[in-house]
Image (cartoon, rainbow, N blue to C red; front, side, top):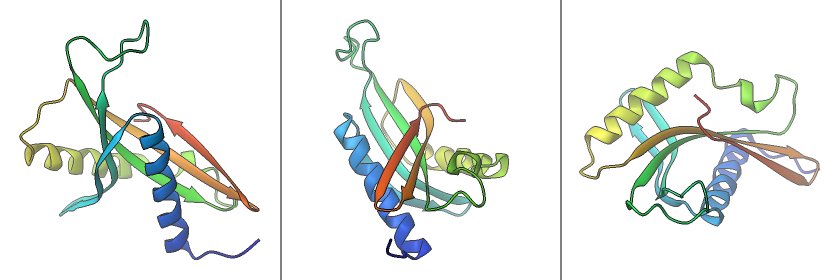
Length: 133
């Protein structure tokens, strides 16, 4: 297995997460959004789906999703899902509020998701947790 530096591993994971979201009906609206208090890896939106039949909601509502991406290549420090602590979650929420304050669009729903990308040998696994925090 070829060794990949941490920054490159993170970039690959974010690209894979963005592609995964697009393949699942999301539109990426921002990557690596920065403000004074923090960073948001990905911001995506999509039409709200009707839970009964999976079609777009008749009200035309949209949801905005703030996504934290974690990419790891070994489990020595625990699974990626456990690497977003309360302090990191608070920074993400604050940064999301800053982002929303700068926007003119309205969203029916806002969500915070985690996408966790794990590399093992030459294969990759993606775990998408909606409403992660």
